[in-house]
Amino acid sequence: MTRVAMLVGLGWALALPSYGDPSPAPQEEVRKRVMDIVAAMEPQYAKRAELLKRSTGSCRMDLYFEEGEVDADEMKARLENALGADSANDSLQWQNVAEIAWKQRDGDLRFDVVIQKQTGDQPLRTFPPQNKRSAVSADQSIHYNVLENSAYIDKPPANAANPTSVKNRFEVGALYTFREPALPSLLRDTAEKGILPIITEVTVRGIPCIRLEYTREKRAPNKGDEVLAKTTAYYILAPAQGYSLLEGMASVKSFSEGISQREILTRYYNAEYHECATQPGVWLLTRVLGYMRIPWQEGAADAIKVIFNETEVAVDVPEVEFSFQGLGLPEGTLVDDKRETGKTIRMEYRGGELVPK
View 1 (cartoon, rainbow, N blue to C red):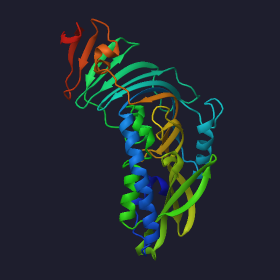
View 2 (cartoon, rainbow, N blue to C red):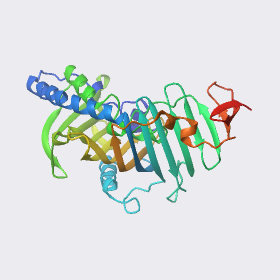
View 3 (cartoon, rainbow, N blue to C red):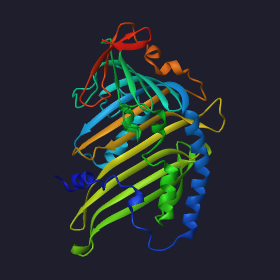
């Protein structure tokens, strides 16, 4: 196992500033500016998150899986190119394309996923062709496979915690996050611990932005304080777009006997936004790309690119949309109840209800 892979496996490479050491000297001016930024972000992020809890929309999601370590600069360049390019023309070999439509009503979530046959020459880890409709609530999830005319009930899948995890449970709100916790909370927590960034003003795609960059070194006290690895994380925010995150990155660079080795990208986020037509001042995603190294699988990474067709917020979605009736389950379809671990109960859908088979 390589040194970088070992660090990823330990979770260190994914550690963001909240795991760093406090700044050696108080930098009150920087801390105050960070807290001012957070204070401006929080109401904007909270309003958007609340609106997305009652939303509908559709998008195209490209799925990519990589095996093998690529230098951070090269991987970042490929990802930046992929955001604005058509899948056939960018430098990543996307494995699947999914067409997704979603509906959300507070804690109830509905997502319909259609995946055509895989693309690319090497099917490393792909989803099979499917036409699947799912509805998730707090205590269960229901699923209807249109192609196979089969259905089942199960426990709800885990919440989507970052952009790449929406492959299994499509939650549009997760596509606005770099990782958990939400960015305003992350910045506030690190500042309160005395972990402060270098703040600069930059321009991204013609948009004036604020860039916050954090660094951390891991040293070996028993080897003369030798540097073993260095992590870097930065976030680029657009104040004019509700302090939305345009770009975020985390990387780890390993060292051997004090000499810098490879730098590996562990997380990456790049997004474009548009102002909501019905909610002025609220900025919604137009397209987003998320990338994450898989810590438990050496040299592996997931990436998604999502291009939104439409997003409507503050929508009153009828409750029936989150039922088998709303999913369009035909009369007489067999339904497997898998909610009890290690046990499956076969039911039949009759008259809008499940009856024992």
